[in-house]
Length: 331
Image (tube, rainbow, N blue to C red; front, side, top):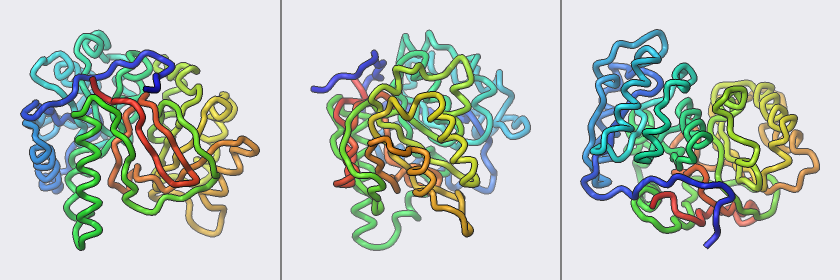
């Protein structure tokens, strides 16, 4: 079985009946979207888990753009890490708040009782920080309110959509509950080969601008995290010039010379108009680097999101348009 280049902290595999906490590590709940929260928690129940919705999600005291003040968000999250009954933590939504309380994380609690933390968007910065500091295998995945809560309508209509829905649920089950290599992930939409080739390495990535900004903090991923890595990223509501700049930042910092392959998620609100395409921008920044590039992957704000566990070895075959997880995400 392939091994990872750095020590990973794998959570215990989830079991039927385990308690999953729905938390608000970033933005608050819009009251008009309470039905999406309810639908999302119902999906977790259907997957076999008990669910606890944290006070900051439904009855918190929002602070500006956050669900609560930084110290309050950290206190709630750390309490979940220390609670032996809680076996996983899933963000209800993203936002703009995680950076404000990374320095309040109880990293010893993570090491003492590692448990899966799931989310994307702003929460991907939390996953990356935890991975950088502890080796925790967090899972870049759909959040509860604006992810799982939208599955019914995203998969409504026809046998093909039903099959995709089943495949996605099975992928989450394999990643979270089976201490064995999850295998091939399903392509829920047509994936694109932007540069042919096949390469394997540990998965690392998230929302592009959060990854880049994290690297300017003490919670930055060490350089070795990118050695031979399969780098995945997505972006939302930004001009292509900003994506170009962030990719060049990764180039200047040496990241693009270390990775083995690149996965580009489905863009949402990126670019447009008469300028270059996202494909042109990516390939321009990569230059002559011989990296497989698989694009249109089912990650990002357009949803749904495939579960991508950080640090787990994966094989990206851009030519065949496949992505396979080679080592377990849980123990």
